[in-house]
Length: 443
Ligand code: NMX
Ligand code: MLT
Image (cartoon, rainbow, N blue to C red; front, side, top):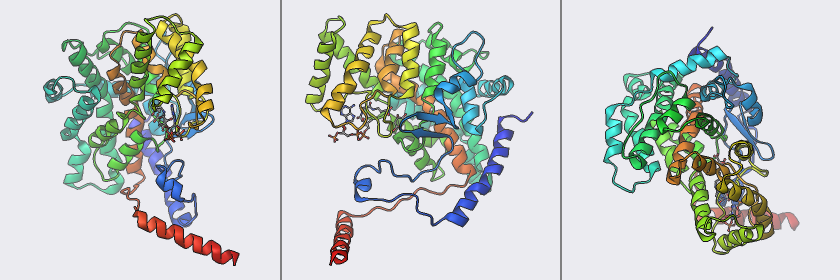
C-alpha cells in the first residue's frame, strides 16, 4: 500500500495533463468579466483563482474535495469512542482527494508524531515577546522563526527541478502542521499559565494531544478535532488562503507563507471575529449583570451596536448566503454538550434575533451566522476563556488547507501571482471611452 506521499505523487502526475490541456487548448476562453465595481469592491465574486482542495457554494457551504462537511464527519475514520474524526484524516483527504482508510490515517498520525519536536529557539522567541502582545502576533512570528528549517528553501538554493518543487514543500508542510499545536499550546501556557507547559504525548493523535497540552479533559479532544477540521479550508479567495497562496507564489517557503496568512487571519473581519464575538458578548453580559436577556433586550443590544456604526461579529459573509454549515455543526455539538451554559443561551438568542435585524437594516447581503458566531462559546465552556487566543485555534486548522494548496500550487507549476493595477485616471478614461461607445451606438 502506498503511503501518503506516494499517493500524492500519483495524483499529481495524473492531474498535470488536465491543467496543461486547459492552458494550451482553451487559454483564451473568457471565464468572468472585470467590471469597475469588481475592481473597487475587493474583487468580490470574481472568478480568478483555481483550487481543487475545496469549493464554497453560497447556498450549501464548503465542500472539501467534493464532500459536504456533515457527510465528512460521518465518512472519516474516528478514534474509538470519539464523536469527531481524526484531524489527520482531513490532511490526507485535502492532499489526495481520497477518504483514507483507518490504516492510511494511522500512517499520517505516525508521520505527524515524528515531526512534533520544536527547536529550542522557538520557545525562546515566544518567551522574548513583550507583555501584552497579541497571541496572533506571537504565533505568526514563531512560525516565521522556523523558516530556517525549510527543506524547500535549502533544495531551491542547491538547485532543484521545477516539477520536483512539491516534494520538499510537502516535507515542510508535514513538519509545520506537526509543530503548530505545540507552538499554539506553548503560547497559551506562556500567556495564561505562567509558562507551565504540558508535554505532548507521542501516542496521541492531533486532537487528543492538543487537549492534553491545553490541560483540558474529554470531550475537549473532540472539540479540538471538530474545530481544526471545520476551519481547515474555505476555498481560495478568503484573505488567509489568498495570502498564503500569493506569498507562496513567489516561491517563499511554507513557513513564510503560513506566517503571512496568519497575519491576514488576525483581522477582525476575518478570523479575529471569533474573539470579537466573545468580547462583544462579555460586554453585553456585564450590562445584563450575568442574566439572560429577553429577546427584546437582545434586539436592543444588536441595534445599539449597529447604530454605533459597528458590525455584528460572527454574522454575514462575503460568499455564503445561508447559515454557515460550520456554524450548524458547532450548534449541534453545543445543544448536546452545553445546552445549559449561559453563554450558549446568549449565542442561541443571537441566532434568533440577529438575522431579522440585519435584513431590516438592509445592508448585509448575508444576514446569517458564520463559523465565528459559535466557536468561542464552546471554547469558553471548556475553560478557554482568554478569547484573544481563539484565532490561534482557527489558524492551526486553517494551516492544513493552505499548506495543501501550496503543495498543489507547486505540483501544478502555478506561476507567480501578479495582476495588473490601474490608476484612477486610467479607470476614468476607460469609463469615458465606453460612454462614447454607447452614445455612438445610439446615434
Ligand atoms: N453587521 C453589520 N453590518 C454588516 C454585517 C454585519 N455582520 N455584515 C455585513 N455588513 C455590512 C457591511 O459592513 C457593508 O456595509 P457598508 O456598505 O457600510 O460598507 C454592507 O453590509 C455590505 O456588506 P456585504 O457585502 O454583505 O459583506 P462583505 O462581503 O463586504 O463582508 C464580512 C463580509 C464577513 C466581512 C461582513 O459580513 C462582516 O463584517 N461580518 C462581521 C465580521 C465577521 O463575522 N467576520 C468573519 C467572517 C468569517 N471568517 O471567519 O472570516
Ligand atoms: C473563512 O473561513 O475563510 C471565512 O469564512 C471567510 C471567507 O470564506 O471569505
